[in-house]
Image (cartoon, protein in one colour):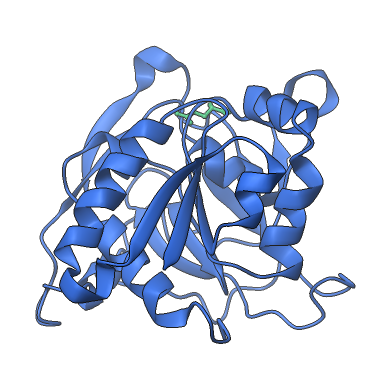
Length: 256
Ligand code: GLN
């Protein structure tokens, strides 16, 4: 059995469980042995092979995690055990090594992604929006037949963060060897001109997101995946299917 947990301290955990359930059915025999659980304490976390951290409010989530004795277990899960973890919106913030725009001098983060996020990048709740995203990685999602450009994905942005800087990830005793952060999705045309076709940034110097790329809204580094938007608030299961498929594939082996 593969146990996939969804951190259920606050935010959109129920919606993630729903979509993961649909995704596991869509994976057919590969997904049938998947058990989905809500995670509220370290005992529950310790039974998980993979974890989703939902959207919500990252400061609140971090506070509740600290009160529940979950911060250190979460850090170990992500950085030492290197189990697959996906954070959406507030979840992405928690998985970042650094966040700005934190009130009262900052908040606790779990870390795992060598990036700095800019919280509430697009402004307040009223500035929330839904926009079609081109996510090239979905072409390799099961059921896409690997061909052509995937259909647009409806991105729900609610007080969303963006990834504003890539950090060097050297020097961490927990993770001596890490792959570079991969840019998996951008929102073109917000910052400058669109180059949505480029999904990796090999020439990017540490600390910089290429200026002409647009806003970075999806990243991956080894076992850690993060999206600025809320796939759990759509009924499009493609990202859940894509992520779960890799979890099924890699669990039990080395992530990379
Ligand atoms: N702005 C929120 C935060 O800082 C995230 C919003 C969300 O998850 N929808 O945590």
